[in-house]
Length: 461
Image 1 (cartoon, rainbow, N blue to C red):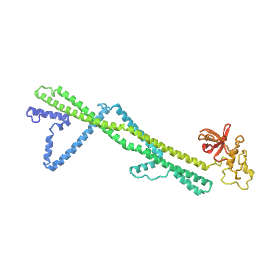
Image 2 (image 1 turned 135 degrees about the vertical axis):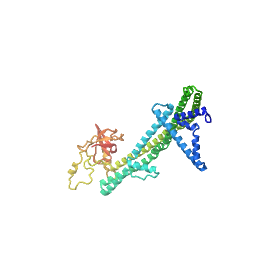
Image 3 (image 1 turned 120 degrees about the vertical axis):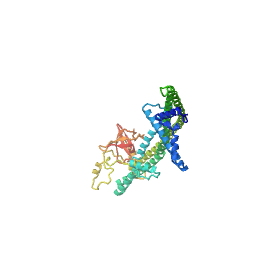
Image 4 (image 1 turned 180 degrees about the horizontal axis):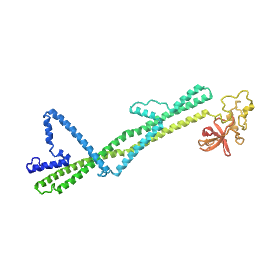
């Protein structure tokens, strides 16, 4: 309005521009008096088309950089004022806040469960780091020998050195073979758990959660922009009201009223511009809030998927421990007997010397009633079967030495009257009879006695 005025109007316009420029430097770009400088810059370039295009492109990049810097600065100011309690903050609704809290809880616990499961499957931290690097490099993880398989290898090598025909060598071979089977079961469990449980958890953290985090960061920026626009509009309206109510100067000359009207018009334009920016910021914020809300509501589907994976993990772990239990039962049956320190020298690795008298040999066996052996149909005899068939519990007396305490591992139901029922974790006294089946012992609990299976007991020192 004052650009082409002469006389007092031109002087008033120059004074108004100078005062506004000093107070609000950012208004200089919208009031039109920076055009002369831009035209001077174009003239200094020589007016050549090529240089003009290059300068225009450079000006565009500089404007974009300045705009981004301005937006960043505006967000930083708004964030700082919110922390200091000097600015209002747009609050999200309660449902949205609950979605955010549930998402954060899901992420935190998923990280902890993932890490601890990795420790369970691979206790060696260096091995975990190596596997992590192979996965990041998209290369196949090399096969690694499990601890059980390594122990089996050492036992078998030791058995070959000691002699596979010796009792110790035979036992080492049997135990080594079982450890090898346990190591193979462990390898299968680790692979199954990694595919069915670890991979889905890791995919959530590296995929879905990163997307949610990115959209939440964008939403926070949109909120800062919205609150900054609200603050600018509020300040512009306050300045407009002040410019309309109070003249610029105390004098009552006509030109002062003209200056006041000019300032009021400028602030009116600024209010309109701020309102327009606020509407745009509100639209962007609402759109981003809806996108983020949909992603957060998808956490429910994530829980369903993780629940299914957890069931698969439990199935794999159950199979692994069931296989290990069965392998150890088979090993106990193969080993069969008590240690040699329990029943005299019944487990002696070599026969007594020829010079040993029958009286000396008999003295090493606990004194128990001698039960006759019933011959079989073919004329031979089966000592264990004969003893079991002719066992009279009333006549059985515990030996003076050679009894031990044992803890019951599992409940046991009797099959006939010669056996003793067992309850898990109870303590009983056990001993062996010469010629008994090595898988059975005589157990006593108070006045009750009967045969008990060795595999259900833990011998105590």
